[in-house]
Length: 174
Image 1 (cartoon, rainbow, N blue to C red):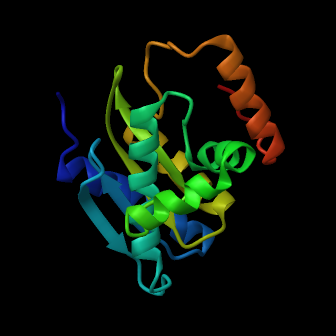
Image 2 (image 1 turned 45 degrees about the horizontal axis):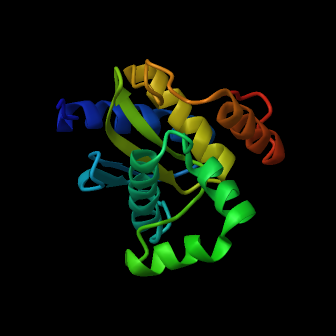
């Protein structure tokens, strides 16, 4: 099992802060291991006081749900999936994890090959801004947001793509 190192996380945080500064949006960034345990957390000056907790919860959620199913590539899909099927379960999951389940944009699992090695969460902007920062930073440090070997059935891909369309992200596809 490979692990994310603190130095790798630092590079991701630096890249996120670079983009956040460019956008004029102070944020907090959290990175967790595959089991949801915190590796790194940083709050930019002027980021809201609740953003560190939200970023950590987003990262935890991405790790938890991606660990359970390849059908959950990011927070927006998790949110929509539960909205369609069992919205109470999402609220209940937040309660029984002491607030560590938050489904929103700006969180994604991190892969090395086919192994999920962690997840990140960004909080402070809109979901779209948090997503944009994450995509930028992920690209800059070379983190993959999905496994190399695609084991997801075609009907599940079609459903994920429909969810992206529903939440206004038709430029994405799975």
